[in-house]
Each structure stands twice: as C-alpha cells, then as structure tokens.
Image 1 (spheres, helix red, strand yellow):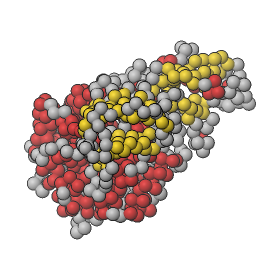
Image 2 (image 1 turned 180 degrees about the vertical axis):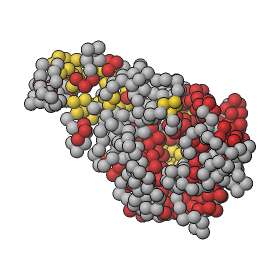
Image 3 (image 1 turned 90 degrees about the vertical axis):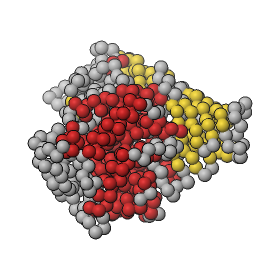
Image 4 (image 1 turned 60 degrees about the vertical axis):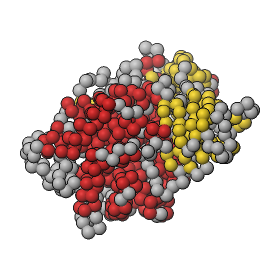
Length: 630
C-alpha cells in the first residue's frame, strides 16, 4: 500500500490512501465523499454519453472509423477516471464502483493490440497511422495516464488486468522509442512522469531509462511547430537542465518538470534536480498567482513573462493546479522543505477546491481572479469554452473534471508523510492518520477555525518525533502539549520528540484573523490594489454581496480602517466612486476616481473557492485602494 509517488531513494514517503480516513463532516472529507458519490459517476456518464468509451469498443470490433467522437486525447480522460476509481476503491471498497471499474477496464483491454499498443485515435482502420503526429497526437500522453491508473491499482493492493494492460503498453513504448528505436518525443509531456512511477511500482528499470531518454530529447527543437504555437509551447526550445523558469503551456511544463525531477531523483542526477528546483523557485516567485494558480495566457494556456499576472485575464487552468501539486509534492519528498507543502495547501484550497461545485457535478476549467461580467447560466450541455464565469457540467476539452477526481480520491496521501525521524502532519484535515507506528486522531474545523487537536491513539514504544507544519503565513501560531503552557512556534516545522503515550494531545493554534496581502509593485496589472486572505484561504468580493445599484468596478477598499472576521470570510470598509473621471471620448481623465464624490459601502469577502456558488456574479480578489483622506 502506497501513494501516488514513491521515490526509491528518499527518506520521506507519503502515506497510502488507506492510511488516512478523512471525517466526512470536515472540509476535505466532505469533498472526498462528494467526489466518490457524485463526481466519479458524473464523469463516467458523460464519457459514455459522448461516445468516448465507445471508441474502445469500435477498435475492439475492428470497425473502420468514419467519425470519431472526442479529441485525440479523450482516451486519457478514461484513464484518469480509472485512476480516480482505483484510489477511491483503495480508500473505501465499494461493490458497485468495483463493478464499474472492472467493466471499464475490460473495454479498454479489449482494444489493446497484440504488441501492447492501445489507442483509439491512431493506428486502426480509418484513423491516422501510429505515431504520425508526435506534436499533437497525444499518443504517449494517453499511455502515460494509463500507466498512472495502473500504478494506483497496484499501490492499492491489486495486480490485476489493468496492471497487465499497462505493462504491455509500457513495454511497447520502450520497444518503439528506446535507444535503438525512434528518436522522438511527445508534444504533451506526461509519459515521462508516468514511466518513472511505473518503473518504481513494477520494479522495471527499463521504464526509468525510457523516461530519461525522453527528458534528454526535449529542448532541441525537434517537434514540428504549428501556427500560433512555438517550440516554447512544447518546452522544446531549451533542454530541461538548462532552463531557468517554467514556460510555455503550463500543464505541459509542470508535468515535464515532475518527470524530470523523478528521473533526477532515481538516477542521482544532481544537475537535473537542481535545474527543476531553480525553475520552481523562479516560477513561484514571479509567475504564480496569489491563489497558487499558474498560467496567465489564454492563447496557449501558458505562462506569461515574469510579473505578467493580470487578474481579469488569468487563465489558471485547474489542471495546472493539479500539476503544481504534483511537482511540489515531489520536491517535498526529495528535500523536506516546508515551502512545498505550503504551496500545496494554497493550491488545494484555492484552485483544486474552487473547480468543482458543491454537488460535484460542474467545474471551472479556468480560474480568473477577477470576473468583469456575470457568466451565463450554466447549461446542461457541453461547454465549448474554458472560460465563462460559471461552472459547467462538461467541456469539449474535459481534462479538468477527471484531474480533480483523481486528486481528491488520492488526497489522503498528501496529508501526512513518514521520514526517518517519525511522522509529519502536512495538511490539516479532520480525520485519522495511521502510519509509522502512530494512530493520530485529528480534530479540527480548519480552515473555518484555527484550532487543530492531534490526539495520539497509538504510538511507537520507543522515542520518536511528531512534526507539524506551521504555514508560512502563520506568524503567531502557538503549540501546546497536554497541559503544558502554549509556546510560540515560527513558520516551518514544529517538532515534538519524546516517547509518546496513548492520550497525548498536541494543540496547534493557527491565527485566522483576516490579513491584507499586497502585490509586488512589478505586477503592473494589480499595482495599487490589495487582497484579503484568511488562513489558507484567498478571499474575494462578489457582486452578490454588494448593493443592487453598485457595480464591482466602482468599489474601492479602505484598508486603513481595518478588517474584521465575518462567517468564513471577512468584512472591510470601502467607498463607491460616484462618477467616471472621463469627460471626453476616451475612458481617461485628469481626476483620480476615488477622489470624486463617493459614498461608503460595507465590503463582504467570501472564500474564493466558493465564488459563483450562489449564481452568476462578478467577482474580484484585488481591490483598488482608497485612503480615508480621499
């Protein structure tokens, strides 16, 4: 039993999905329950309805394809759903879900060729030939997600048909693209990270070597460039070990960096590992949104330049959030640095939790930080646009719902870790953790409340260490053991080393007072604005909470009048500009807008992760600043 990532050489290991039981009344336990009961079936129903699964049946029947529903990467959505199902079954066995899983695996397996190749968009009658479009065909990308689904199945205790299908597919890739095969690579990285993890799980060193080959082949401009795209879009402009920042298509970049770090970790390639660390540091420092979202450009779903972080044009694809979690988790396992679970927390609460609706049946694809016009009411059909201001039940390119599903199914693995000193609690969620000789009961209403009680139910008989992560924003946190007085603890790690006894209780108090967060002055798009956070949550103002005669672009915040906590958000004082400064044909004028006639308004901030839950609305996170003298 293990989690999604298991470096063979690391002294740190994530716990298995079955090692953590999240309380269904808690923030993450509630979402995990909705994911299991609603989202998995929702994804399966949509892919069946649209004919994406039927594509496998058609190949199995050796039919000539005249028209094929779905994009060339639609196979990957079936595989991501299988991965989500596998983690969920490992966490909580269910006969109905088992039956659905096995039926779906059977349909995939029936379409596999004798040599292990499996794909429904290439290589069969009526379809393009195998590997004829390496830039955009996504064949290896699809295979990568198949391998990750099989890893999930094997790591939850099942060496069954899905694992055998994936082994044959991976062997075919190695045969086709090995050192003596085709000197090519896939336009969408994914196979790299999947091959390393499959190699770890299956005990097959050939898969690691194939991943290494793919990493070294990238960055030499070998992929054909399409109109409106570039070599940078594919991360094929600079070799991975020479790049200093993540660039191009955000999801591709994050998957590639994750695979490169895995290769570096397993082979001891310090230069490659340092390159990925450098890319992460520079990207987080200059190209990452307050929410943890990555990717500012719509045209290529990509990173912009340094400091190019417009709030209203933020793309912040949900899948990029998942990719960021994948990369940060691997960096933590390698280094033990608390910066990485800090970013994971930010991204989970403000990107991953933002995408799905409360019922788990509609999703955000893009996650802007400013919505200028209310989105149209969601329809019951396929949304052909990633943007829109409302969650949609499905998309023409529907990578995000299944990516959210597999992340939430495996969420327990990111909650805690084992290292050579004991157990580490990384993310705070109500439930029970069983690992490293410990059984810990975590009682908390975090992030609504800041008290986290960690009670020891079982402990190793010898001295050991319990380590708690103190978030980087928690500069006044306190920690108490049993009846001892609470002491202040700085951001980073708080360690308690002793021979623990059942009944020992650690009480962590995290400060959840609302706080102002100012943007770097080099971010032109939000200069002279401010945001409000509360604990790990980024807050926003929605038009739903403004007077009916006030538009969100007319609102200014007066931060010098203070913030107060309100429900799970905050309140602040603001003003409403009564006029536009423009007096001529252009929207510009000689007077500062907030120095004109204005009236006060009470501003209510709500958690960004639930914006638009009450219906279509305008929204913004960064508000322009007005002083009381104005």
